[in-house]
Image 1 (tube, helix red, strand yellow):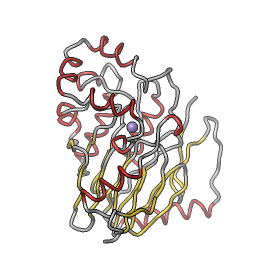
Image 2 (cartoon, helix red, strand yellow; image 1 turned 120 degrees about the vertical axis):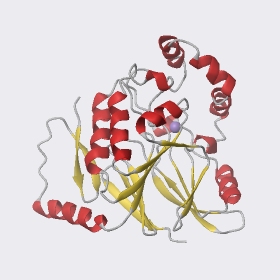
Image 3 (cartoon, helix red, strand yellow; image 1 turned 135 degrees about the vertical axis):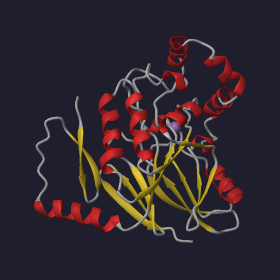
Image 4 (cartoon, helix red, strand yellow; image 1 turned 45 degrees about the horizontal axis):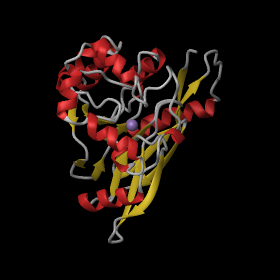
Amino acid sequence: MRRSFIATDAGFLWLPAEGSVKLPDRELHNTLTFFDKNKRRMSTVFISDLHLSPDDSDLMGHFQFFLENLLPKNTRRLYILGDLFEYWLGDDSASYLSQTPVEQSLKRASDAGIDTFLMRGNRDFLLGEAFCDRTGCRLIEEPHFLDDGHQRALLLHGDSLCTDDIEHQKFRTIVRSLDWQKGFLEKTISERNQLALQVRYRSEQGKSIKPMDIMDVNARAVTDELDKAAVRLMIHGHTHRPDIHRTHRSDGTPALRVVLGDWSQGPSYAELAAGHLTLHHAGSHRGIDVAQ
Ligand SMILES: [Mn+2]
């Protein structure tokens, strides 16, 4: 089914294929003022869990449209916090996976002056320097400490926080080892594709992952990371449970944990500007002051 989406003052909404939804004039007005208001601030935008795959060319198109037309014009930095792709078979597999147009869109975004940072997720952990060379992205390791002079935050994909998922943590340790990766990348792309089909995360074709399929974070693991980094703000994805949680470090220092959403209901992102963070998901948004 073809999908398309529409910008509203609250964010972006998927429309049905034959969608003849007409925005009332008031909403259109709000949409325009929303974009005007944001023009004057420099923004950092965070996304994750798009799960782009050769099986969903519409989603690929929407991501390209987001990068080229919907990303706030004042976006200075874009952080992709893992699982941009549903699976990645190595940087030589972009064309095999029909992702060359996505790479070209990322390149255009970085050429247009948006600093784009890329963190690997538990699905696209084989993204590497060749991908970055082609797209202009900069690879960042997790946990990544963001300090832009105004804001300090700890960035993670999020799967490392799901310590109750013993099976996943075992898988993570194996596939993150350089020996395993070297052996995997020495195989032909179609051999790699066959192997990737056996991984539990890549289940039946086109099946979307529901939050209940992914365990939530472990509270102790969250506190440990906040303590280690001594920050008051953590941003991650992976769990597909977009939300803003108030939490604290073990010494009682208040902290926020912002969880990014997946893209199954439309473009989903967080925007950080002037000490304020807004989480956009499924056509609604929620903001919180994060000035430190
Ligand atoms: Mn993930």
